[in-house]
Length: 161
Image 1 (tube, rainbow, N blue to C red):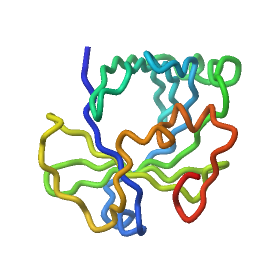
Image 2: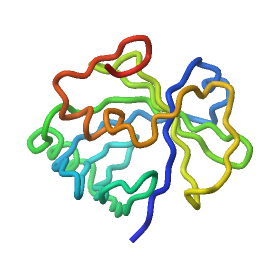
Image 3: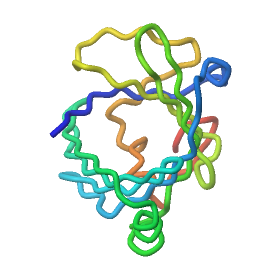
């Protein structure tokens, strides 16, 4: 079992694009969005994964991830995903000892850009890049699982309302 510790922020400009060391298109859907455990299927470039995440306790939660065949993932997204499939471009941005992941959402959530940084400890200090804005860690509306199942969320001025 792995533990995921991450902080999440809105992005205030596109400076991360010239800082990025690469990007990948991601499509993901949820087989379950229960608070106790979400189950996600993700196509990430040429790979696919099934991920189970436990409930958040602040910025910490349990996480198990397994690589699965791409054809299986595509079929699960088509036939089993509850709600919308999330489509985004993920940029990898190194900054002062951490790898930031910046997601530009497409489709229904176009205009939303969110940056995440994974930590080894929830009290770990992290330098915040200039492109990073308001912190939204713990704000459930920014959970991809909530976005996939929400009918009433929309993007206004780069944030969800």
